[in-house]
Image (cartoon, rainbow, N blue to C red; front, side):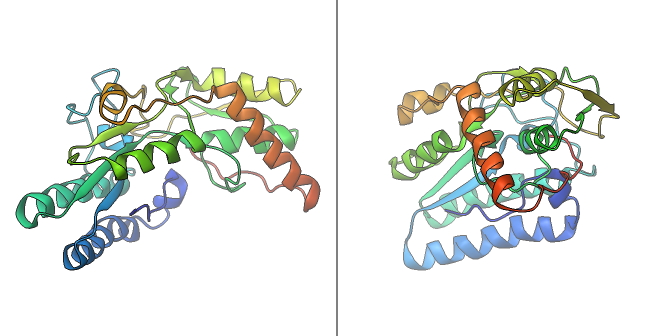
Length: 254
């Protein structure tokens, strides 16, 4: 399983050259090893390969709408190249490859300063801070609980003769504002919203079409957003009691 790469915008934009190297050189190193030892390899790709999509929801056949020179492109294009390498090693060298296009994922043990929207909202709410929404909050995301994602990854790795990309994500679509209100409700807090400018190239819509995963993996997520958030909030709250107050979250969009 090649999952090595920062996945939060604030982290992968901090050192974009290293992000590209991690995606491209990491994939090359892993593929070279898989070729030598005849191992099956799964590449953790991303919904970011779709960019700011013009097709909704996104199927695996969609080629995306990606800015190749934007602030997010080190991650987006790095993952796209990694997918290309996976397919080329399969076609040219017969390497047994798998590609998972992972949509927004959350769950317990996320870092407090992860910089992604779920952890940001939870940390801000538990610290009594306003919830930071970038833009008008009407942009949408689909949030998959980590247990569901892991199940999908294992099923994909164990599937036979499945080399084309497969979307893994929860097709439930929510606005960022809806997510903020739900986190506040589950924390028993009033939702105080602070709006900031929307970062450049931040996708306006994101929702996976998981028909392929349902058909070839017999997989679909089972954890509802509210249930997954309860478990995630409980984890953050428990850590907050055990340590010094949770640090303010890093700024960044989903």
